[in-house]
Structures are given as structure tokens and as C-alpha cells.
Amino acid sequence: MPKEFRSLIPLEEAKSIVLDHAPRTVEEAVPLERARGAVLAEKIISAVDVPGFSRASMDGYAVHAADTLESREDRPVRLRLAGSVPMGASADVQVAKGEAVEVSTGSMMPPGADAVVMIEYSQHEGDEILIRRPVHAGENVQAAGSDIALGEAVLFPGTRLAARELGVLAALGREKVIVRSLRVGVASTGNELVPPGRLLGPGQIYDINSYSIAAAAEECQATAIGYGILPDNKEEMSKALQEMANECSLILVSGSTSAGAGDMIYQVLDEIGETIFHGVNLKPGKPTIFGLIDGTPCLGLPGYPASALTVFGLLAAPAIQKALGLKFHGRKLTGRLARPVRSESRQQMLAVGVFGGLVYPVDKGSGSITTLAQADGVIEIPADVEYLEKGDTVEVLLFRELEAPDLVVAGENSVLLEKLAETLPFRVKLLNVGSASGRIRLEDGLADLAGVSGPQKQSGKITVLKGFRRELGLIFKDARVLQDIGRSRMVGWPRNSAMRAICERVLKDQGISDLKYVRLARTHSAVAAAVASGQADFGFGEKEAAEQAGLGFQFLTGDEIHFLADPAKLDDPALKSFISALQKA
Image (tube, rainbow, N blue to C red; front, side):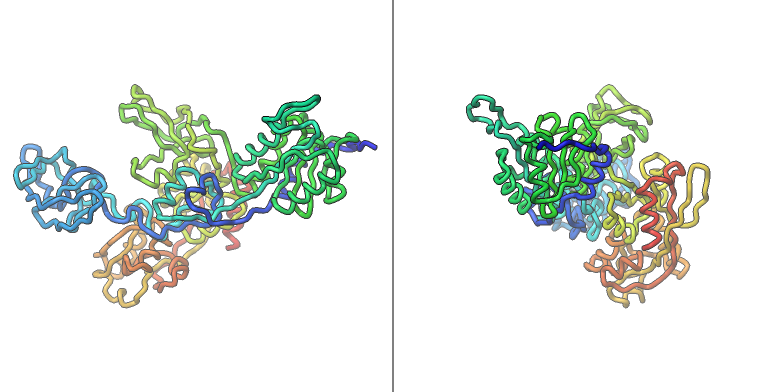
């Protein structure tokens, strides 16, 4: 006797049930060339500096910046040409005072030089170089580790590996990466179906759903395993579905889901598994069925191709995305500029990030891996447009389906925040930009929270949330370096950062002001990694970073991190969960 649909559950209830039984994933190490589109299962911490050496960022001459201070267009400074450093070669020539060495963009900086004079502001005469414009220390030089520092957390689990992420992994020298994988078994049912390419007989049609549903699953970054066409025969269908349950993490089968006498899926599912619901108050999609076979979720889709794809998008895709940790949007979107943009008076494709409908530039130069890592896509600026106003509507050409983070936290870096980003069941994006820039990101609408150092004042536009205290001090491998800090090599923080200011103030109070910075870092883990690897004798950072790296720590001061939020967003579930987890940590 045919089965009747006694009650149709609401779509939202069906979604909740399917998501509560999201399929299981497995982890495997794959080569980079096979990782495109996969979902990252490990935290990526840089084992190298990018770039690995200080290099020239312009064609010209490597010099001592102090030698150029008196140079003018009409009174050039003459320097002796001491040699050249070709691209891809070791810098074997030393730059002494009063000398210059020819370099190309990307050349290793020769020892002794601290700046590069662009070739446009120089003139070659015999064995001398005439410098017509002064440079300051560090000008036109990309320092080792300035893009990505040794020990810096670059990518987190749940990130989909597209072109930019694979570029970052390649820049770090990674050959393989651990990813999540999800096997989805796909089949169609019906004696009337035949595979494409075969001749049709009376009453037969080509199987469409095996291909369209498999492709849709692949677009969600699952691995689709095709099981062909299942005949409307209970015994054979039971055997096939049992095989799919043993070999896959999710079963998607289309057709034969209605309540008619000839429909088999609900009968088989009742016998070899458990039916959780059969019938959804949805058009198209009423006969959708869902259950479990030996714990493996099985979703029965309607037989009509349009209905099958509709239900896949509503129920299967979210379940796959939840299991893999992904969220998708379209390939193009429109948004409003978060800040004004001045063009280069030529047709330009500007790298941008996207958050909450706001579009913001992230372009740091074509050679910057940071640009690659932060960009969601590009906007096209025509040659005749010189300026785009804040609030202008722009269209973003996305590099891939946009993964919208559930929460963006900008401001101070902390080991604790990195742990939360790694372990919370939703995607947290950390922007390690320091206190001042973190507050600006919040005010521009580009962050949900700003983590800032020190006491903060509350206002009508800003709510101050209590954060956490941490111990700050000197991180070292050998305690003997603390006896002569002024002569020891230090890994420091960028100028204008709160950590730099705190460190220099505390050490100055102890009579130490002449610090020898050999490199800079943007995260506490990177500070510890530089010390652990011997690239610096000591650094300033969190106690947790020192302990994590197995290094010594000398307490200097305490620091309190507060979180600033827009009062209108205080009820956001992700924000509330983050603050709650923070208070329990």
C-alpha cells in the first residue's frame, strides 16, 4: 500500500536536522598540486622568512644612506662603484663608506648597504656613480622576514586552498599540506534512466542528476563518487545503499523518494537504516527524505533535476560546507568602498578585501605575499578615473567563492587569540595590525572587535569589553644575553606599535635605550621563533609565546587587552561566543 505524507516539516526544521547530522570528514596529506580547492586541516606556521634575505625593491645602487644626505640634483654626490649583485646570486661584494654597488629589483642586498638609490636618480660616470637624490635607511629595501616572519601563523584550519593560499604555501616551501576530505556517494534511481551516450528506448530518459549533483558536490569541495543508476528493485537498491554507506560519509540519491507504490527509497531506508523525516513543506522538494544508514547520513532528493538541485542547495550543500568548515558566496559582488582610493592614472586592477559589504584596498605591491593572502578579489579602476570616494559602489571580481568569516578581530596579537581562532567552532579572522589600526578598522566597519592595549574610554559609538591580562617581558634562549642587552641582537616590533612603545619605555626605565634591532616581528610567536632559531639573542613578548617555544622568560611588565565593539553588534552570536570563550580561557 502506498505511503502517505502525514506531516510535512518546515524547511528550517529540515535544515536543522540535516546540519545536526553533518557528515564526517577525514584528514590526509596531499601535494600542493593536488590541494587546489581543498580545505586546510592544519595550522600553518611559517618555518622560514619571506623573503629569506634582505633584497632590493628597485633597480639602482645599494649605498650607505648617510653618504647620500648632501646629494642634490645640481650637486650630486660621487660614490665609487664597487661592483654589482646579479639576480639570484649571492651578495659577495662589501659596500664600504663612499661606495655603491649596482643591484636589480630582487637582488640580495650586499653587506654594509642599508638603502637603494633608484637608477632614475643616479648617473654612471667611469668608475663612479653620481647620486642626485638622498635616501633614508631602509628606503627601497625589503627586509628579510618583512612579508612573512619565521614562526608567524599564516593560515588556519578551515581555510579553503585557492590560488592565493597555494601561493603562500609555495612561498613557505611547503611540498605537502594536510587537508580535510569528504567522500560523497551519488546515485540516481529509476528503471527509465540510461547513461548519456546510449540509445534511448521507449519510455527512457537520460540520467541527469548523477552528473549535476556530483558536480554540485565537487563545487562544495567534496569528492563525489558515482554509483550510477540504481534500479527500482528493493534488494539491489538495499545492497547499493549499504555499499555507499560503508565507503562514503554522505549519500545523495535522487528519484524514487515519493510515497507511491513504486517508490523504493523510503522502504529501503526503513528496513536497513533509520528514517528521520520524509516530506518537506517546500515547492519544489516536497518528497525529500533523510535518514541514516549505519550512522551515515542519506539524503533522498526529488527526481526532477531542477528540484534535485534546489534541495541540494538548501540541504546538502550547507551540510557539506559545515563539515568542511566552508562558507560560499558568488564569484562577483558589489560593495561600498570603506575608504577613498587614488588611482595610478592608468587602468588598474586593485587588490581588495571584502567584509560586511565594505570593500577595502589590501594592495601592498605586486611582489607582496601579504597582498596575496589578504585579497578576496580585485576591482577595476579605468584609466580616466583618478579618485574613488569613500562609499562609492564598486564591483569586486572575486578570486574564488568568498569565505565570509563569522568574526573579524583586529588589533593586538596574542597567543591566546590565535588559540581561540584555531579552536572555536566558527571562523575567526585575526588582523594583527596593532591597537591604533585595530580601532580604525572597527570605526570603518571592517572589524567586529578591536583588541587594544591599555585602559579605554567608553562612548556612545564604542563599547569597551573586558579582555585579559598578560605578562610581557624578555624572551631568550641563553640568560647570559641579559647581562649586556645593549650589545645583544634583539627582535623588535614595528614602529608605532603598542608593543614597541611598551618595550622601549620599560627598558628605558631600567637605563637601557640603545637597542640593537636585527629584525622585526608582528606576532609574539614570531618573536619567540626568531630567538629559538638563533636569528636574535632576545626579544620582547608574551610569556605564553616563550613557554610555547621552550624559551626562557624574564617578566618586565603587565599588560591588559580590552576589546572595543560597536554597541549595535553586541548581540551577534559569534561575538558573544568569542567573548565568553575568552573569559573562560
